[in-house]
Structure formats: structure tokens, C-alpha cells
Amino acid sequence: MDKEYLLKRWLDNDLSEEEVNAFKALEDADLYEEIIHEAKRFNGDIHAKVSTIDVLENRLQSKKEPSLNWMKIVTRFAAVFVLAFALFMLLDKDDISTFTTDYAQNKTITLPDNSIVKLNESSQVVYNTSNWKKERVIELKGEAFFDVEKGMRFDVNTEFGKVSVLGTEFNVLTRDQVFKVSCYEGLVQVTYNNKKIKLPAGSEFILKSGKVQKTTTVVVEPYWLKNMSVFKNALVEDVFFELEKTVSN
Image 1: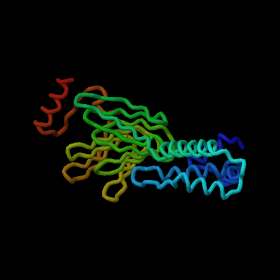
Image 2 (image 1 turned 45 degrees about the horizontal axis):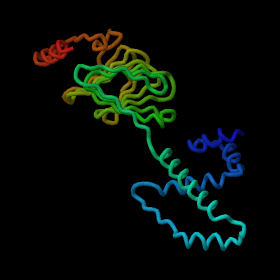
Image 3 (image 1 turned 120 degrees about the horizontal axis):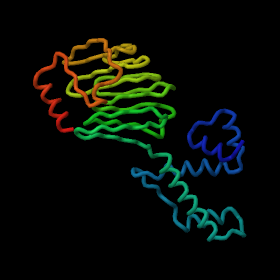
Image 4 (image 1 turned 120 degrees about the vertical axis):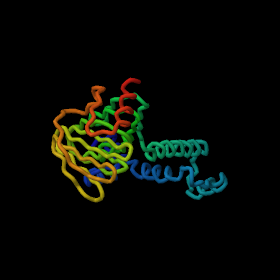
């Protein structure tokens, strides 16, 4: 097997049983394992204790290799040290992406799998890009519309509950003690209070003031995507607040 391919799979901890055997058969396999082992020592909480030069020299002399060049040994040790630290920083660092919107601002985000998130004003989404192929999970505050590419499960975590899909279009609102999920295409699952609610296209889940209701919707996308505000049985102060935002836009 290709050495570069094996190394990449090994660094991702994604080797098959056959690939594990192929990796162990590499000439430098033991060195790579040692580098990763040493790299784990370089973090902010652990202070590694390095042997003195005299101790290192005695160890080298004990190997009875008269042709050893001390400068070459030091150079190799330094190279391993630098490579180990670089690998540790690469492997230990999660690539977290965070997108936020301000008042009267919308934003469109393309995820690593080409799924689309349209973020409404005063909202935030956070996800881990380095782990996206294994786990499609987003943390949401505020409101966002999702157009999800088909594939493995896609989870949206909120302070009130979780929304799970495989591929669909839906909107999630979590603001001012309101949790609302609207499904426009496909099938959505909402997890709230250890209960799972299925939402087919054209239906909504609404949690407001501690009360849960499931309703239907005839629209094909949320009104805010077109800078529209629609009110139904709303309080006057809520209407004025929305109108103020529309004027500011």
C-alpha cells in the first residue's frame, strides 16, 4: 500500500485491520509510534523532564557504537523533538468554526459536506470541521434555516432540545423561551424531554411557555428569508418589536 496513504489513515486513527498490518510492516513504523508517544508530552499542563547532556552521552556510549557522531545525534534528537511537537499541535487541536450574526444581519454558511445554513439575525452556529466526516453536529443559538445534503445523521443541538435529520430542509428557532422547528422537506426528528417527535414536511413543533404543540404549515420556506414578518395571534408588543427590526433593515 502507498506509504503516504497509510500515514494519513494512521494519523486519522482510521486504519482497517489489513491497513494496520501494512502500517506495522513499514520500516519506520516504530519511529512514527515513538514520535506520537513523545508528542503527547507537549501540552500546557505537563512539564516534560529532559535528561541532562551527560546522561544522554552516557546512554549513547553504553551502546558501544564508536563511530557515532555527537553532532548528528543532537541534530536528530532536535528534529524528532520539533516534529513531535508539530504533530501534537496538529492532532490535539480541534478545528472549531463559529459564525455569528448581529442585529439586522443574515449570513449564509456552506458546511464541509456542502449543506447550507442560513443564519438569521442575532444568532450563532458552532461546529467541528475536523470531525465533520464522522459526526455532523451543530450547536445553534437563535434561528437558522438548514438545507442538508443526504448522508449520515445531521444533528442540531439547542438549549431546549435536539433536531435530527438525514437530508431535508427545515428551520429551527430558539429564542426568548421559544423553541420552534418547521419541516419544509423530508422528515425531521425533534428530541425534547427524552421524547422523540417526528415531523414530516409541512408540520411544525412549537414549545412556548412550557407548552408543546404540533401544527401544520403551508409555506415552503420561513418568511424571514424574504425579509417578511407574519403574525398570528401575536401580542401587540411582539408585533411592534418585529416592525422595528424591519424598519432598521
